[in-house]
Length: 245
Ligand code: 6GU
Image (cartoon, rainbow, N blue to C red):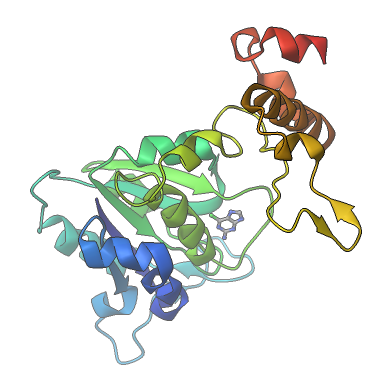
């Protein structure tokens, strides 16, 4: 997968060099480039923002650098895709979730445009929509200074779904949100720590009982922490044991 990220704070995205994302880049699974938007300015101050038309507080990102940036990036199509999916992080976007991560993981090319200040001139999105698909995406119902932290989260959520990135594909299946429920609590050794025991059933070696216990714990935890997720389950996602609980 190719990912381009455009930002006025490239340093903000340095964590994408680390750990499993960094490894995916080294291996070529992920072709990720971070671009400084100021590359496409022409004045001595490398201006990217200006006051809002119609008045109001804060600054808006001017359209010209974005337009030139997209012209240049789209002029280098990849083998697999002629145009990227443009993702614009914004608290006004659709809320990013695991289902969206799974959709994005099937794309060949993602382009993230990080807004700062009060946002990007709307014409940037309207013009971009004439040559690529455009989606505004939010991390959740709170406000950040800019899109960079959202991009870190989204790139991580997508990259770990790419084939060959996670060593153990099983860990993708069992984790929170894949089956609509939160994960059961987990334990490791020692069996007793500061007077607290690992639940007996986990040490029993009885695989069916362990699976049932974990499923019950998932249901109880979801009911307590995220009752909204229980409401969204459809009946085919519940088994006989679930109903007995
Ligand atoms: Cl994607 N951007 C900003 N600036 N704030 C946010 C957000 C994104 N998601 C939640 N809050």
